[in-house]
Length: 102
Figure (cartoon, rainbow, N blue to C red):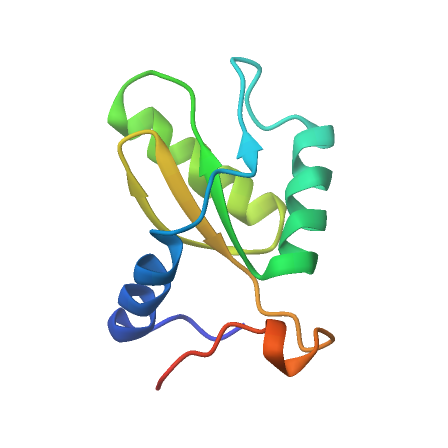
């Protein structure tokens, strides 16, 4: 997947405002089951909001990046205890896909 531009990330963060967290990470971190659940959620929706555990900001960002890498997705951003992951899926119907501007 090509890296996202700043404008594309801004668009995704805007779309993510209305989402509720669908993945909740516990104190055990990015377990294989959690990675599988994240990959499945991304296959259904392309854009997923993740709730991170409490801890230092650097640790939360690292955990979000680790989960994104394991699920072969892109971490769009981390704000507080919330991360936004994106993985395009061309097999979804056009009305369910996230539209990005170039």
